[in-house]
Length: 309
Length: 325
Image 1 (cartoon, rainbow over the protein chains, first blue to last red):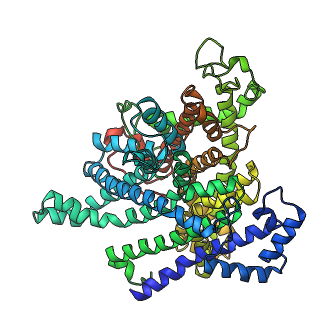
Image 2: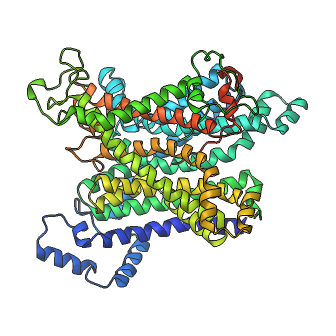
Image 3: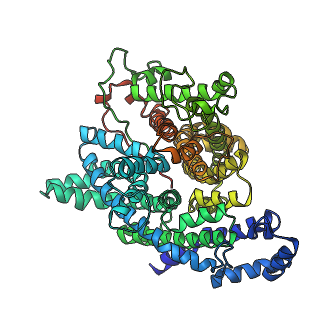
């Protein structure tokens, strides 16, 4: 297990290194980094001063060394808009996104396992067709469109839910989570259904039934456990993809999370904050990949053993 | 994106044509398409969108950009001719004309991006899978690295540094989607390389690229095309998200995502500006998903016979989802 964990951490770290270096390369390749950090209206003296203060006048290897040091110390400079430390701003915004993502994935996985299992229990039945249609439509709706139509219907016309903001009771969560939920839910239902259909037609299910196991035990004890692996992989990928959705949802609903911070810093050309946000997201995804791998190994002992095929 | 069995909500098509027997002539693809009404409808929708995107702008001229403040915020009606059919936006521009123009922009981003990533990803994947060893490792690590980051995150950084334009959007989306094809092609090639006909070709001294092109590609192509059809949805949704957020297509160009963004502030008074482009996006995405499910069956010689049966007798199909974040 230790060897497995070490290997997984090493291979998951490769993308992380790519991103850290990628951000550096992009910032330097695109011309003068001073252009990226300072507003367009900066004077020549301001620019020279800024370049000297941040070491942009040094050689590229020296800059890379400085940059790696900054990344390790979580020192990304100051925001141009607020003057706050970029790392602080990002860390303040992060929990809001994390809460949103965690609740969404919890509902998506539980709901999808339920709906997918019911659909797979009788393939091609009315329930199966209906849930497939629902899942496919859900996976195809553009999330930003769903969000604004949701605001129009439930916020403006019916006045059941607030149109944006985070202050208030549980009702402020409904629309943001519903928007984030549709795509992962739609995709997961299809995956659960697919792997449950396969699992329910496997010989061990027949054996379990012939031994007199109850239907509930057959479906949830035997079939579901074996159908978990693909679901877990996809759920991990979807959680990564949730960052895409979070940017959109937070922008529309004014949710003070990391996605909104990213878009704001792009539109107002605040590179220090953008850089900090991207790197923090990269670290989170790195951690998430490791958690998914460990969960895999815990569920399926075949994954733990090094297989030589 | 995932495919599953297509939703069948209507009656099964009548079973009048003879079903294919072993040795009988292969059923033509359009007949197979005709027997599956959901896939047929999807194909017609996609075909229409393509036609409209190519020829629409020629017929419309500058109607998508022409302002007419007298006609501001007209609701959809039949009173103002074809241009007023779907209403007008705040500057009096015809929503229908803008939808047509937006279809062109959307396709001009999505189609080149999908083609680029299809070609590059398949070539790399087949090469990696055929050779194996460190080349395979290298390609797979590259794919993992790209795929473990949300495409929007890559796009956000790149579009900050470089200005948003159609070319840059295509490049980003193509790079972000290469791993999907790379993985699929590698898996196919790794399985095919030990087949007898590949061994035979190698024995005759065929170099590796001709083997990949002549012996591996034709077998892997149907799978890759299915993945491409699905991926088209993803690319289209990402493009419209980026345009909606203001870092994709920039005005005065027209894209469906951008139209939703522009209509957002008039949502209460003029719902049609924002709602209609969203429906257009959804229509195309659902059609592509349905068609992908059909293509998967129709291009698989072991499964194709199912399409010649009426829907009810087809039974359960094996479902292998290709899901990407």
